[in-house]
Length: 464
Image (cartoon, rainbow, N blue to C red):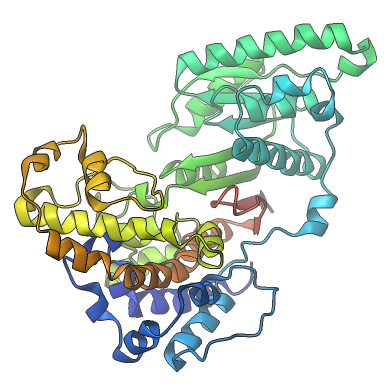
């Protein structure tokens, strides 16, 4: 990761310039007249643009060169180019994938189901790839075991322990999940004894499952003592790696700090998620350690002004799946794009009748072709605190007029999505710089198929 300070500074300048776009919820499109915020040249351009052409703005594969069919406004063209140059690629490196360690047990016709029991395709893809990456790290760095944070029922630990023969200590705060994990471990071992020769199971390492909650107040000494107890080892007489598959919100920052504060921790691999749940000085001014920013450079800058701050709205859009939306824009699935217009029309009704309930959560309603607004609205508010709106007389003329402008909302949402990888890159650059400032070699790469797993970047660090 080269020249991070300059990349961060430039990236933040771009985010600051377009914060009016980043900080605008699509659900407020009609309430706050978001369309009027666009430059007039953009408005005129989008009014004449077919919906499918918008896909050019959020094409995420940096390596694919396509001939544009659209003459874009110069500012928008320049913005797209600089975003592509500054953002971290979301496309996995196929050559590096082929070089990862193989796990034959995952293909065993009798046992493979135990590794993927009740696992959806998205999660299966993630844990297989994450396990291979972590096995590669164990090959390159001398460690005795790895510590898996937020291990759940142990799917990742099970592949590492039984598939790759790596000792794993699982930290999971929910005791019932640990009980399930141990039951699956025992079942797998029982089945393996039936279908495998003794030589094929001698490398097995049963994971250790600890019911522990890791927080910003957890002391490194307490953490080390827990591991020592789990493996019956003298305190500190071992080396380990730290791994985490989609630690939510501040947990990513907590993992990094624990990694840096434990001398025995030699490598770190984690894939973050839920950036909007990270603490910031804006959201939680009274706490000392925040999830963002982490680097000394940005924290010093924050003392001078709020230039480096990212709003909740900006961090939330960074979690959206741009590839899935790109597929919908460039296919004939236009009907499914109208859901944002329905939600925005509903928000106008909410604000008109109960302004204090603005931005209330509604039920998720999957759009289907021909769905009327009334069908959507009744299902969206059913069972929520907005149920009382069912008896309200709706302004059908206003609703009809709003829904005629659904293509404008698609344009606006696409523009916000265009900035999404940029905001995520700022967060990831800040994390990488924080680790670099503390003497680590850092790498960030896309490891998952972004269409299956939108948060697909792994942050890897080793101590020098």
